[in-house]
Amino acid sequence: MTNPIVPVITLDGPTASGKGTVAHRIADHLGFHYLDSGALYRLTALSALRKGVALTDEHAIAKLAEYLPCRFAGGEIFLGQENVTDAIRAEAVGNTASKIATLPTVRQALYALQLGFRKAPGLVADGRDMGTVIFPHATLKVFLMASAEARAERRYKQLIEKGFAASMHDLFADLVERDARDANRAISPLKPADSAHILDTSHMSIDEAVAAVLGWYAEVKKAH
Ligand code: DC
Image 1 (cartoon, rainbow, N blue to C red):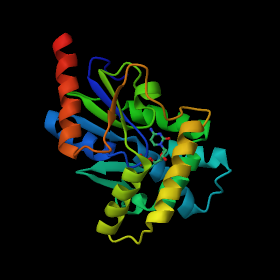
Image 2 (image 1 turned 135 degrees about the horizontal axis):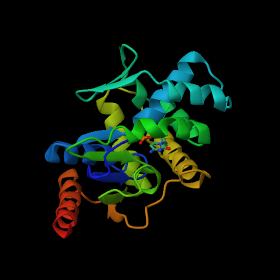
Image 3 (image 1 turned 60 degrees about the vertical axis):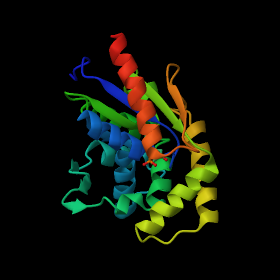
Image 4 (image 1 turned 30 degrees about the horizontal axis):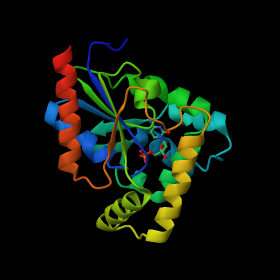
């Protein structure tokens, strides 16, 4: 059983909304653990791509998710012995992750793994359904958004900095397609939780977004 008293801050939002960076910074600031739930879908996708498993074979992909040999250590992500921190960020892996994330048994297989990240002194969880499905009783729920243009531009810069080839036109099209898939799927679609604070980061710096979330968290703590 995870401890329901351990505080959880959920940050949900579409791809490239800045939630990963903001979540990391908040976890560092508060000394909390950090769950990058998208990485679990990306690791499952990478595993399926490497093993040549058909994306329609739900049972086989759910098995990969259930027995995912993943490890998070000092900001690095491992699949078995291999450091796949950069490999899982490739666009092909992200697109495959978004596709397999529509499969109910894959989501089910990753459910318990995600709950296990809730450990003292607290957790910052980043994803699509953290506040709606995985941690519905979270201490604070935030939904980050930004215009598709702002997000495509951020993704472009990130990829170029990491040495990946990127086309702004393709990135924008992929992002709009992925948003639609994440928001319209039948199970755990991307949407703000009823009690979520909405944060539009289109014209915000990372520092400003971090300050807003920490401000809300301080208010919630004061109220308890
Ligand atoms: O946050 P990300 O771009 O790393 O996520 C990759 C894909 O994983 C995303 O397109 C949808 C899926 N995902 C999900 O369905 N639920 C989550 N909690 C996190 C990610």
